Image 1 (tube, rainbow, N blue to C red):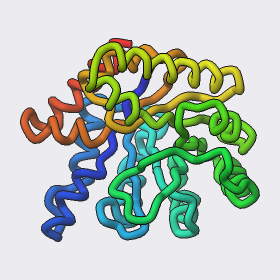
Image 2 (image 1 turned 90 degrees about the horizontal axis):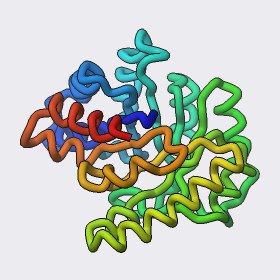
Image 3 (image 1 turned 180 degrees about the horizontal axis):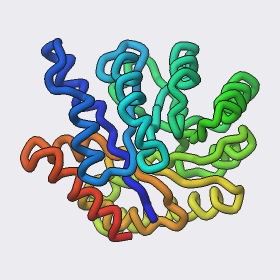
Image 4 (image 1 turned 60 degrees about the horizontal axis):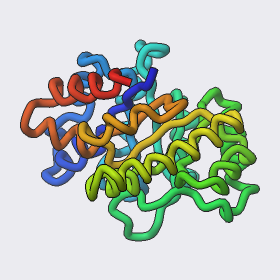
Length: 246
């Protein structure tokens, strides 16, 4: 069964645009969990332009009694302060992503040429602390094999290319999906679990949710954007239904 992890970054973006505590990120987490979401994702960046360290601690504390029912996923680049935070709060999963200077959002997965020693040590330390590790990668053979060699538990497939192809035409969407299917089959053969995220929405999930071996999708921007018109509870339920249809 494919699980939905709701990324609440955008709620923090709105809050930070004005300052103060409104809208409350913790209230957003509560609404999504009460709607039935089995996962919450945050991506605390070094500049804290949306999720802050305080948000991470508050969410971790609120989710602690729900351990085993609702998973907490922290995304980010493996910088020292983020790794220390993950070690401190012990989420269910840490998704390590590369960060490019000046990017607004993630633009690509880890290349297979990424130096291995330091990152492999970070992955081993997180796994020793009981944190499942996922590596954000493009749907290509080399980075998937690299992720397996690095000792990751899962890969998160970067899905923006699929989303853009799906927008252009049904044929392009199907052709792109075939690329992801091959990537998923390789990941499974190497013992990796499969997550996915970036620009998945109610339209393209109809196809993407059928990806073989797909365990989790992380969705934030599209879900929060829909919530502006229908409310967060309804938006979360809409996406839960879309994912459950798999």
